[in-house]
Length: 125
Length: 125
DNA sequence: GTGAATGCAAAACCTTTGCAACTGG
DNA sequence: CCAGTTGCAAAGGTTTTGCATTCAC
Image 1 (spheres, rainbow over the protein chains, first blue to last red):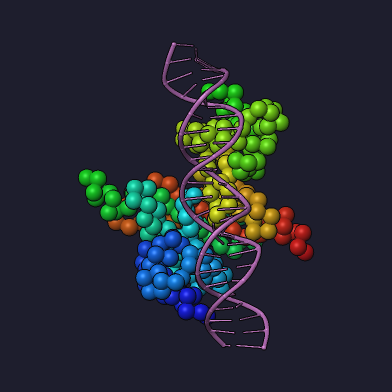
Image 2: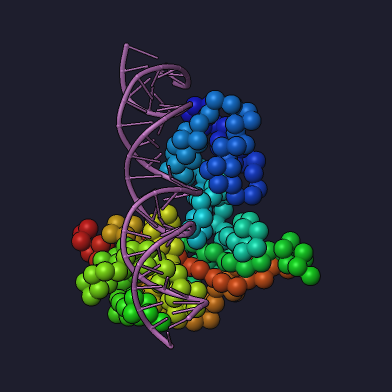
């Protein structure tokens, strides 16, 4: 548990958006100027590995990172590229929404929705 | 509608796996040795653009392409990295499984499951 | 003290682009 | 014809890696 790792982790916990590694790098560089991008990648990987944060991969965009560990889906705005957490409907667990092949072992479900976020929808009017 | 484009399209329609652009390239190169990887990318992009095929992005892996246009989810094996189509449970449309933010316009839902595919699960025993 | 983490630069990887030559309709 | 496509090579952007240095415990 190094200072860099702690800093990356705390930055992510204080972010409600879903920053990319490069964005995390810019933000933590304010507190620790010597930190390098490779270290940010290392720390993020480590934190994902121990389950402290989640990695969110949408389309071909850079990976984003998320401190919200509750099960949830992601909404991806096609207009501003922002990512919002969205809640799952109760009683609609992802595990019930697909027919798994016989013998398959599911470990992780991911639901993503693409569209126009409320802010962009408002601006378009 | 060029021969290259037709070839890429037909190759994909005859594939039940989910080949990457590089894999499509290798396969079509057997029929047309002069085709280039950039052209395969171009053709795939065009076909995705007109809705003739679907692009499947899972994690940070290379994009895969899919000729199955029916709504379906994808199962991604963590052991062999293969991708299987899986059916949605009837009555469990993705649109009912999440609570969209007020004012958001959803356009596309994607469900992905990660785990161990039946073949790999069998081999592990 | 020692094994792991850092920082830097360079490499790796997938994908896109610029451009000249070509071709399908 | 001629707009659009191809093929090639080179560039682009994200992520990883090699390695010497430094650090946390």
